[in-house]
Amino acid sequence: MAAAGSQTTIVPSDAELLQAQADLWRHSLYYLTSMALKCAVELHIPTAIHNLGGAASVADLVTSLSLPETKLPFLRRLMRMLVTAGIFRSDNNEEVETYLLNPLSWLLVEGVEAEDHTYQKYFVLGTVSRHYVEAAMSLADWFKKDLPVPVPSPFEELHGVPLLHEDTPKLDEELDKIVNEGVAAHDNLAIGTIIRECGDVFQGLQSLTDCCGGDGTTARAVVKAFPGIKCTVLDLPKVTEKAPADDDAVVSYVAGDVFNFVPPAQAVMLKLVLHLWNDEDCVKILEQCRKAIPSREEGGKVIIIEVVVDHSMEPIMYEAQLLMDMLFMVNCRGRQRGENDWRDIVMKAGFSDYKIVKKIGTRGIIEVYP
Ligand SMILES: C[S@@+](CC[C@H](N)C(=O)[O-])C[C@H]1O[C@@H](n2cnc3c(N)ncnc32)[C@H](O)[C@@H]1O
Image 1 (cartoon, rainbow, N blue to C red):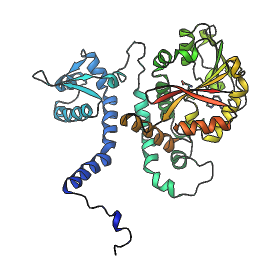
Image 2 (cartoon, helix red, strand yellow):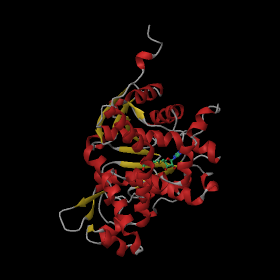
Image 3 (cartoon, rainbow, N blue to C red):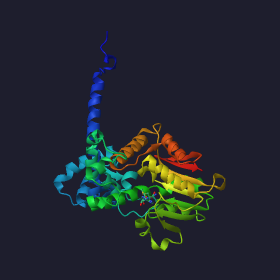
Image 4 (spheres, protein in one colour):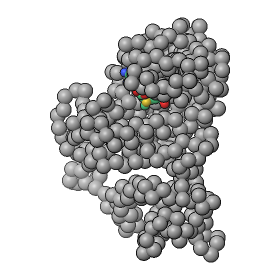
């Protein structure tokens, strides 16, 4: 008789064993891809390639970045890795191999004046910062601890303060600045795409409250595309105080707490807000939004723009969604949600129905009806 569990014993073939070793290398070493990206950003390699006319050899880069000549062969190895990771392109047709920008490295070029260009340097520097990496390294210890609910993130447990909080600067002022700039860069990326792809969501609206709308960048883009919409941005006083002063004619700002009050409008938008909160807090926010809108017959709706985790997506998109979920698990109390999770929280908040109007990239546009 077979010993218990013997049916599940894996006996890999030689080929499988060799593949397993290669995969073990990859997964154990992926942090080096992140660090190579960090290095490229800190050396300003994308900007140097851009300034060199969009294509550069390693020798060109050594000169333009003022690096010691002795680093040339090392830079070649770094660039080879970054090309393989999809961060640059290379051209082998010429005698000398040259490196070119692709859409990803274009976002890391400083000073580009183009619609849809949102400089992502601080997103990279925040996500690979020492504080984030240390929090990720403490994950196993964090799992073993029986922490009180609501469970603090590994970041909060390790560093003693939450991320994106008024106390974060006490931990490290520079980190707080980088993270805030990184979040803004992340949130502002692809606003134009959202508006182009999802015009129907805004078409015909008379008024919109952009809830937790930050400095109003999204609201201004909506009003530019749909001038008939009267747009209000709700955010904390410390954010609305810094809102552009000449902006009053375009959008109006209301200082307040989303847990207490949402300025009434035909529609309320929550773009990249709920992923920062746990389910209980999301329900409370959505309840306030529900109070702010009229009935479905009068066009009342909440527009949620967020990741919709979906394993049937293209594997790289799905992996990106899961990595973002891990980022939030390690560093804050929020999470990325799939359709079932979204259904649960909107129903708990008293809404009658919802529709995923469109999926764009890793995100979905969800309309929620009272
Ligand atoms: C991740 S940002 C989202 C920004 C914006 N929705 C966008 O897509 O660009 C989260 C925003 O929520 C605001 N916020 C956090 N807690 C809040 C609260 N209790 N009431 C109102 N706004 C809040 C923050 O100040 C910040 O501007």
